[in-house]
Structure formats: structure tokens, C-alpha cells
Image 1 (cartoon, helix red, strand yellow):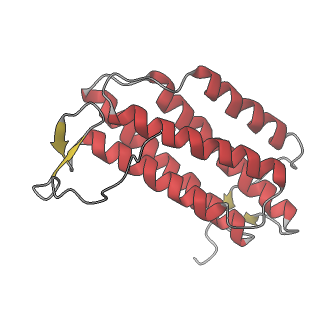
Image 2: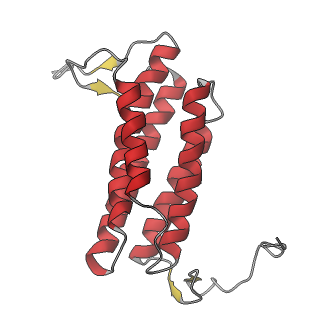
Image 3: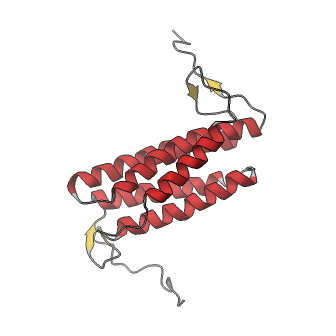
Amino acid sequence: MGHRLSKIYTRTGDDGSTGLGDGSRVKKTGARIEAIGAVDELNSVMGVLLVHEIPSNLRSVLTDIQHELFDLGGELSIPGQTTLSDNQVRRLESALDGLNENLPPLKEFILPGGSEAAAVCHVARAVCRRAERRVVRLGETEKTNPATARYLNRLSDLLFVVARVLNVHAGRADVLWRPGKNR
């Protein structure tokens, strides 16, 4: 494989436009770029999560997700491109079911927190929800891969459960929400 990024700056985006993978140029404020940016931000937060002490089985799952998020960004950068499928959605569901079955059932809502890794995982979950909203918004005006929104929806659920697992791993309890605490 040749050098893909031999020159980092091109100056072509100085006018407020950016190039898509198909060679077309669009405004940096467009719905497609907002979706790509949110997925990129999610992948970056996943990278921050992965610098923490994480059980190896979770590290493997989260690393695979990072690769899929990069694929997803590529998919979004080429209108009409499809890289994700319901196979990836089912894989997330399987991981979610396996991790959740060992957790105590929730009787209360929880707040983001507990261990540092769990707190970062909750940030990733919130960014994932934003990425999902951006992809859904893009789908309101352009054709998108339906599996993409399903993937992000399932991923946010998985990240919620992973945050709980990380708290268990760290010997920390989930932070329970106390409604009206300061009334």
C-alpha cells in the first residue's frame, strides 16, 4: 500500500468546504459532515476509554468497535456506500446480552460515574447518542444505510452496560440517582 497521507494539509477546505470519498465537495456544516464528525468524536472518546485499565475481553470488543466506527465514517463519506450490516448489530447485541447477564438488575436510574473508566464510557455513550441523532438527521434528507442507525443505537446500550461492568471491575458501585436530592 502506498503512502495515503503524504501531505496533511491541502488548503482545499479553507473556503468552508470539504471533500467526500467520492470526490465531491460539500459544506463543512452539512448534515453528512456533522454525522461524520460525531462518529469521529465517538471513536476518539473510545480511544480515551481504551487507555484505562480494562479487562481484556472488553478491550477486544471495544477495539473491534473502533475499527467498525472507522468503517462507518468511511461509509458516511461516500454517499450510497454500505459497509455496516445487521451482522455487526447482532454482534453488539450478543456482546450486550453476555455482559448484562452477569450484572445485578437495575432498580434505580444511575448517574454517569463510579470509576474513571466507567465515567469515560458514559461520555462515549452520550457522544454515541449524538452520532445516532446526526445519522438519523442525515437520513431525513439523504439515503443512508438503515443498519447504521441501528448499530449506533445498540452501541449506546452496550456502552451503558460496559460502564457498569467497568465499575464492577474497579470494585465501585454504580452511582444511583436520587430524585429531588437537593429540593
